Length: 163
Length: 191
Image (cartoon, rainbow over all chains, first blue to last red; front, top):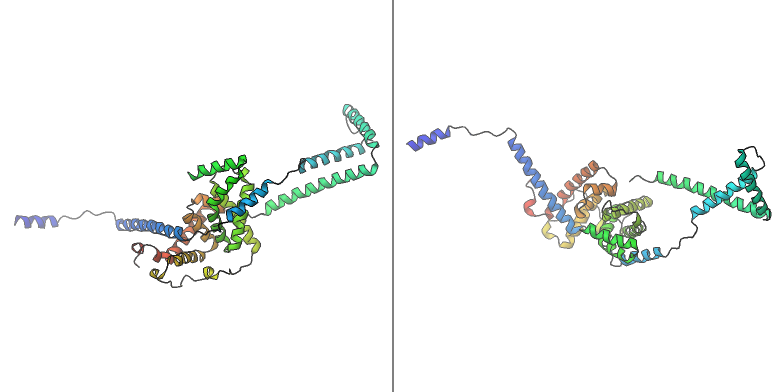
């Protein structure tokens, strides 16, 4: 009798209530866990089955090309050096042509360039005019070529797809 | 550990021991080829791209500072070379090897798993990946097969982090639907 009374009494006690979104949280947590497991399973399936394989001689072919790369001979005077040399000669010739007008530069500097010009004229005077003109023309052409190539390289860099 | 090994070989190659480059080629050639295949979908072009990429990587090895993994740096070269090749080709062609490249829709019903042999399983997985858009197929390859991080994928492809995550999520959902019968039976949700 006492036991039954105790049972009845205990049944009257209300259960503790969790937060209203408790069930939602549990279901979300379960979903996350299953998601994680599915992800691992998918990864396992993909890793087992989808890598592509190359023929066995691929490495040999690549290494043959790599060894060919080593043999390329670089010139002693680089392209840049040639451009600088051409630029210097072009500047010298232009300066020589403008030596007539002594009033352009300040006194001390003028005297130095005049003596330089005189020495150069003496040296170059012995060289044929045709040779000098050809050399000057080639220098100018090389400068122009370098200038246009630089512009082209800059343009192709700007036009290349952004990664 | 692999990164340390790679750097050891790279230093030796830079010192002039170029034969050691074969070690790096052997290590990364299959993934490089796989990445090219995902972009180009053609075996011959992909092999050419893989080869060209390894040559370019060798030529530019002096510029590799070790700020990222060698594999990430290499796969960036592969990806860009493949994209250039793809843009150059432009025409959509059917591969001769049509058993691999047959097109299916997502509504296609699939043979039950117990009827597939292992080789069929490989073909099936490849077909499922090939049904994905090109970029998603590549991201799946990098993330699940190569186990690259999202940041590494961003470095390789140039896509933004949110973009990568969205595409991976979409690709995963499609693949889970197509390949769920290949996964363990207890993992399949009851619908």
